[in-house]
Length: 103
Picture 1 (tube, one colour):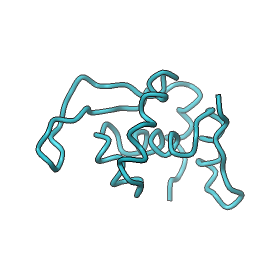
Picture 2 (spheres, rainbow, N blue to C red):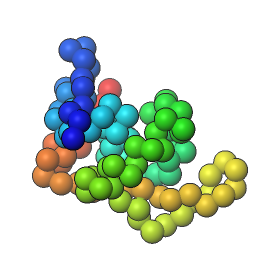
Picture 3 (cartoon, rainbow, N blue to C red):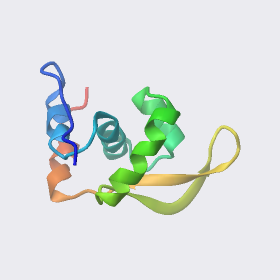
């Protein structure tokens, strides 16, 4: 597993997320889902400010690590197609991220 990275200038939440053995893009997905709640990949991309093409491949590894899941629900994206609604699976190791200030 690859350890995530956080810069010295990053918020404490980013430094903590780096400890979850995720890549930078994976923990951007995870933090967005924790902060904003269930979303489609397109919505995560918009909130994170990172292209959907860059973020979409990051979802499967997070599922395999047990950090996010498909809710079974679907939402229409901008193209009108149904998209998976993803949510973070809050575990003891990630719960403290909810209590941090993301600003």
